[in-house]
Length: 452
Image (cartoon, rainbow, N blue to C red; front, side, top):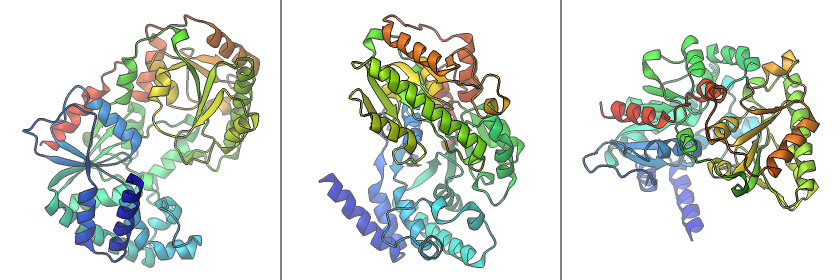
């Protein structure tokens, strides 16, 4: 029944949006708003309403942040799919002309409609469409503000084009635009390309319009401030709030933990998409990692292995998934997208590479195993690998990897009751959360700014 209601709602919304009926479109957006649940109850004295542009990881951060201290505002969730529909309507002609997409194709990400270079170009046709689109959003937000007097909007990535369009139009209507930036991890080998993008006005990474921006790590904040993307006075270092939840995990006996969790490798990264040598390195390593895990899985048929993708519809792990499916082992399953926290809590071992999940594993006191095959003495590979230390299990060859994993599965009391100093160092560098207090920093930052 819910699916039918949702489908009907989005169909009606698409029709109204296609006729550019701003007032009715705003009314449907108003009807779609839902309160953020699973947080501490908002005090009755709080009157300021805030719209959150839905993104699962960002929502998780806010939920964890407001578990113990209530927000001093009333948070509502707006599904970004509605903004995608509006965006697509204005750029439909370009979709058909440039991409040969069917007009009935499902929601298309903006970056697949127009590249950054096209979007930020001086092309008269595109500039005219952008102007009309922004004028229409202005009208929608004007009516939405009349229906739902909200004081701020929160997004989770300053480079998301649809979020930026909505956020900047909110600013024009006297609404604060807040960005809780969820991306922060970059490799040293990507830094030069990333800095060029930050300086290139034809790249979405060079444009940030937030009135306030929170960031996960000091190294990422410094990079954005240095390249004039962010103003230091508007940027606040909070760390990763959802890691607080992992810090609170109590280490259980290894025998009580049921699964081995493998994070499928991301072999395509935006800042290295043209670096064939790096892609080849990641492809070969990911293949070797999956082979090793499957070999061990055959030796332990009673042990459950969960292979998890970063997001539900990603394509960068297709080769890895084919290997897993081809092996057809009863104890191996693939999970697509969603939060990793529940799986980490129940894992006796977490396996991954160049993933923030490795750090989530450290915070939860889970044994973390990394395929580090042929990397230690290879300068090129080191540049395209997270700068790790021996606070994790680094397997330098395939046999060592299989030996480590077998030992972890066999041992019954592999308990880490404390996070070591080396592990704390990694958490501070990449997540600014070695103390389990990121939630406090996020809560105070948002409450203070929204209620100014």
